Image (tube, rainbow, N blue to C red):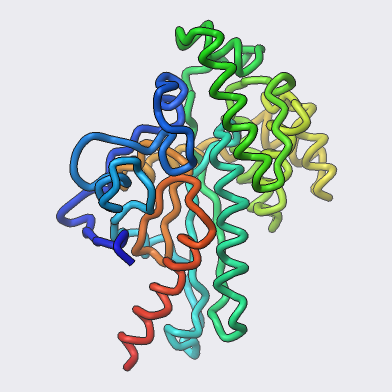
Length: 302
């Protein structure tokens, strides 16, 4: 794998990557998942790690301190049997995060096809791309990018058309005409509430669909409570958690961890506490990195 030139955090922080918000600003960026939002001039970036100026390929980063957050496995489990953990930083309002989710799922399916591959555990972490969005802001993505970010309307519409086409390729029907751009902190808090109740993965999928496909207002506590109820969670408990900001510190902790890693764009995937993958890469890339983790384990136990 030419893409896996590894660095440790002791010597090199995770590549400082331009996130989705910079991509919104620069419509000249090639609109591919690995390129829009994940290009940077300088060493240690997605583009340079792949040896390709167009930015394809995962970031060449080892993340040694991610192991601090890894789940504990039983003493009887050998390393090659232990599940491979994937920690994902993403935002509900990032179109590449939903696309990346689908591609990761396909990559895990490819990796697991052999039948003897280790299990894969996924956990999502909060990352707000636009935390400065007023909590009471209401407007479309087009309005937000054109009015608040100063982008020409035609440029915004072209970018949204492109990403809509890419989303369709992985089975997602984005409807940017209906998307309501909002501050996503409450949505992140709901995901942590769902995590505390064993439904994080389902909540992540539901919120992404609610945002990009259904055009629901994810800043509205009543809407979020509806979504919690649809997941089979206690509505009153969800409302209490949102009104009292029960999980706000959890959101902040995720973002502080991202800052410690040097993550500045999403989606960002930390695989087995060692490898960092930036952007909505192809399914085969995720399968390759998972295979690399398995190979590392085999070598360590040879």
